[in-house]
Image (cartoon, rainbow, N blue to C red; front, side, top):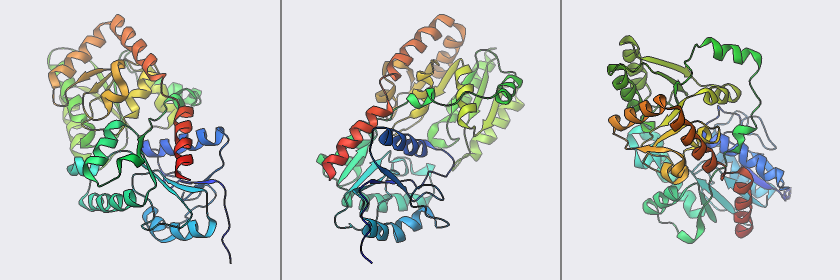
Amino acid sequence: MGAHIVQSIALDASLWDEPITGIGLYTRQLHRALTSSGLEVERWGARKSGELPRGRASRSGWTVVNLALELARRKPRLFHALANFNLPFSRVPGVPYVLTVHDLVPLLLPETVSTAFRWQFRLWLARAATVADRIICVSEVARDSLLEHFDVDPSKVCVIHHGVDHVEQVAPPDSTTVRWLDALGLPETFVLYAGSLDARKNVGLVLKAMEQLHAQGRRATLVLAGQRWFGSGAIETEVLQLKERGVDVRPLGYLEDSVFYALMKRAGVFVFPSRYEGFGLPPLEAMRLGVPTIISNAGSLPEVCGAGAWQVGVDDVNALAGKIDQLLSSPSERQALAARGRAHASRFAWAETAKATRAIYESAD
């Protein structure tokens, strides 16, 4: 049987049906923006969704065993892998490869992932970077990290930022959600952290800052919104210990979009002192929604958030505690920082991400 020629872009959708992470959100928003721009895009490798689902196969197994066969059979215009390294090990004649690299966390912060994943990441990314025709990095920091750790031709690596306007397209919460949020009894100006509870995100610094404020007599509430991750046990233990000492910490776990963004809009301060980000979407989301935001001065966060957020050192608990207290104590400073953050975040639109990505597709054809 001859090849079934597909004129559309084949987009890696391996995370489409999984709990939404940063890469999963990127997958959905890029697909929406590309199709809205008039491009024909097929979703390949999702568990059950899209034009070519993988079924019961694992993500890695399907990519290694099935993807190259499907590329050779269906001959799409090109294949775009979205999750750091998930390209076939070999080239399929006539099908260009585009790869998006989000970060190099397993190499830069090896203690935050399992040994098995670290080796998978290193070896597979080394091969993927070799076979890819073009590589998209989501920040200058991510690009610099890639070029520093791998032998890659710099001319085939470009930077395309995420959009953030998706936060304004989420359906408003229903009445049940509103009642649930009200029932939490949160103060008018609570502190919010959102992200996975892993060591890289530096949640421990936030907990120490809240403990310091509590010891100084400042009664403030911290809400943690995010799923468990590799190494989150230590953070969960520390949360329990703080609660026993009277610090008001509310871990809410993973929240659906309509609930999460409704919660974020209610926050008085958003904190995100991560040790390394390839992009760092949560603080930009908070800024877009008008929430005063504090970030670390590490990784891509200064590049992405600019002057729209206050910055602290990744180990400077005194600075973080001081800036949280300053914002909680001053409505005028919260209002001024929120306005700067919203203005800065307005520059990041998924339509622009799609436009730049389409230009990469054209250059890879």
